[in-house]
Image (cartoon, rainbow, N blue to C red; front, side):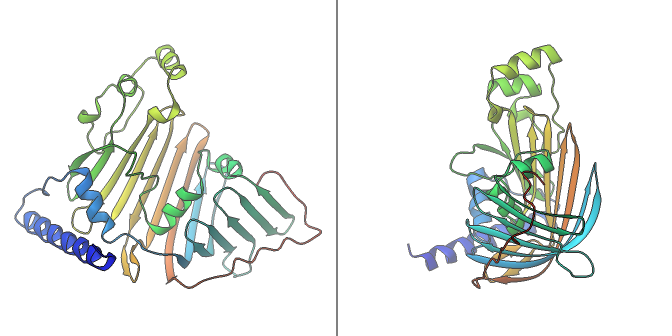
Length: 301
């Protein structure tokens, strides 16, 4: 089947499913039951198809240590580069960031705090108190379910009001930690450690960290927009929530107009809210990044 015919088939499938669910909701009935593969297929029908993307965003950041707001210009080349120019309200650039799949580069132009950084993602992980990589940040910015791996992830599907939820299946050891079988979890359950501290530590020592990561992804029941992700990392007791809203249809697919990220860990809380303004698709961009010769180098942010 050609790419055009495949796209036409997927779009028709999405429209049919959306109309069916719209009628069911209008008649006071729940969404139609669908399996994980059907939900992901209908999401794929309107997911962003892109090679280049630029956007303007207004950001608000709040954390245990500091609060602030700024504007940013973001340019991206798919799976290759994320480039960010950060400015305060007056519009004078105070920082420039360039991310590649394995490296992080930063120039700080803040008065009395000018420096540059070049290294891996450990600096960002330390700042956010949670591991994060290039693909995670790209997923957040383009409105793709973060960390979704359809080829390797195994899910159970649930209905949560007007939304579908995919809940990752997990192993027997995870069931002991949570106190619930994966089939017993309700979409909005707050997952906690059910074992006493000594038993938990013994089990944790014998368990891979990925086995104690539970993923949940929410999709709108009509548009199949990916509206929320929740990650319960019971190995490190970290919790991440991504919320997307105000989706718009672009030439490349559906893109959120508002993105919110909440990270909770034993070290503190980090929140960011991105209000996406003007966007431009599939125009090739430069990613200028020149470090002044006399600028101090630091090995951390």
